[in-house]
Figure 1 (tube, rainbow, N blue to C red):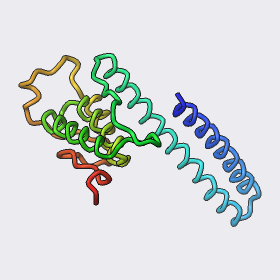
Figure 2 (figure 1 turned 180 degrees about the horizontal axis):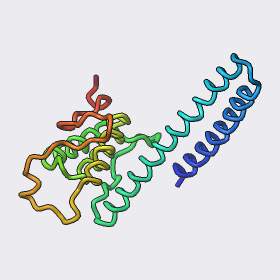
Figure 3 (figure 1 turned 135 degrees about the horizontal axis):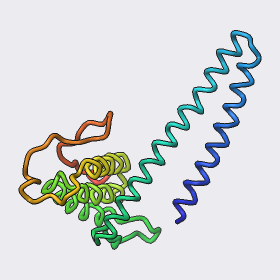
Figure 4 (figure 1 turned 45 degrees about the vertical axis):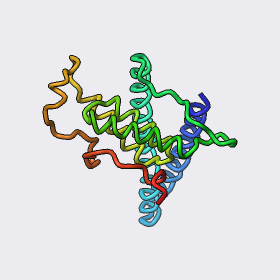
Length: 183
């Protein structure tokens, strides 16, 4: 719940900032000289990029939460029972052990969005946020492209083209988290 409140407060502050910057850009454009119009257009680009970024992240979070709710309803949501340090952070050795298990599950069922979701959680526990995000994007893409009827084991073994979000390379197999490898 705390994360949602933080997200909404941050989003509200960003929207306020976008409106403020956008109004300044429009003021510069209204001034009418070539220099102020150029600066006004340049200033308006920032809120446009910011709104796009905020929208894409909001979509990502909503889709990931929908997958979490579906997986929770099925009883397949990973349980957070990892050992923690006195400060509350997840113990690296515990995260590595769970990550290894999740990676093997994903390698065994690479077309199952559920395994990719659990792998994303394992990446996050191992403090590898970029790979956690890519694994979650993969889970979202697989969930979107899944057939409406439950697929059989034979259908899962049929080779298919990897599905990945636009602009993202299709991961062939999950990699170990860079932060958990000790390098």
